Length: 492
Image (cartoon, rainbow, N blue to C red; front, top):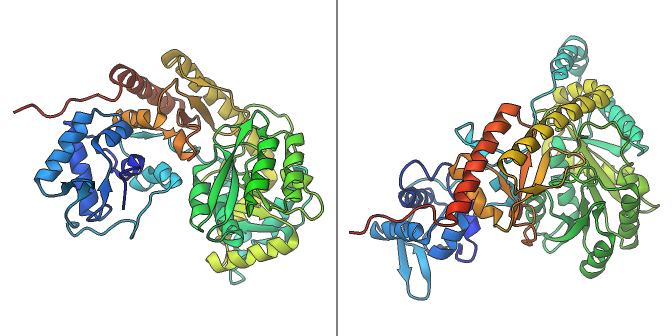
């Protein structure tokens, strides 16, 4: 493993709370020692330079020098002329958590805290709301009225319960995309829909064109099949058609992945003319399109949305439309779907059957009860989102007036530009103030959005208030001290 040119990857490996309450150089040394003990850093692994790691952590160089010196003294690290700083010893017997050749992905670093459980850190790494109260009612109805029928067969439905597929088809038709139940496959969340689509279309050496910035998880899912991603910048209406046309001509991709309504992380809404133009370009270049509508969610408005991009597909165009109930109902209800032309849906269903034989039936039955009420549930969410967005922006205007953002058309987060700083370095300072934010580099490996952070407003007002107070303290610390918040150990 060579981390010498990529200190950000080493930063992502560091355990939660490594800074502790004592001297930072000792906390960093202990964290690196733990990575060696558990096998995440193997003998011979090259570490970043003191200066490079200090910049990535927003620490003084002397702090990293002191940590490396401590690890050299106990034999954990060694320095060799021309080779830099290397791991010198084997693990202390711990089992490596992620297998040989571990490479932490974009989404893995964002969602790592989900696996660690609650703690002192306020994590703003994901945008998820509490479950809708209507879930309890739907569950009671399933138990009272649906369970005997559901238990009467084997329970394997790789395509999904027919009733649920019917209701998803009706929902898509109401959005402006006429759909039959045979064009729908139910998935275990939209995440699985993207993963299985990648399995269908991608091979080592494939290319996927994505929006820039984009959802961090897509980079991991596509790279898992050996594909590379090419980013196309946005304007106010979505992916720029001129730059998309150039990318399609140059790279001849195997897939185009877009989030027309609403885009994650910017919250922008792609216009109907822009959707039509992107569908035309994809058809001209014979590129299948995946449109991810899972990041749904109006903010306080009842205005009609443009039809899905699939509604603009010309004859012969291949558009796969994905959705889920995560944002409108509850992330814990792992029900999503894919809509495509029947031959593509049938092929997708075979991949779904091999993956898990079908999404859990009881979850599907609850979803089928909720689908007819989806517009009502979405409006309730929209009103709550508007209140929380006002609360968050009011706090930011008061406590962090030099931060800049545009009001999102929808979704669940603010896309904030920090003035003239590396947001990744600030995120490390924020974490030491016990609040976690997602830095722009996880959404755009090209580096074009390194000064941005994503800040969800789905949390309760009291959590948002405390989070902004911590961010304000972190920002003051960062602006006051820059990359030197601590000196090294006392001179002897």
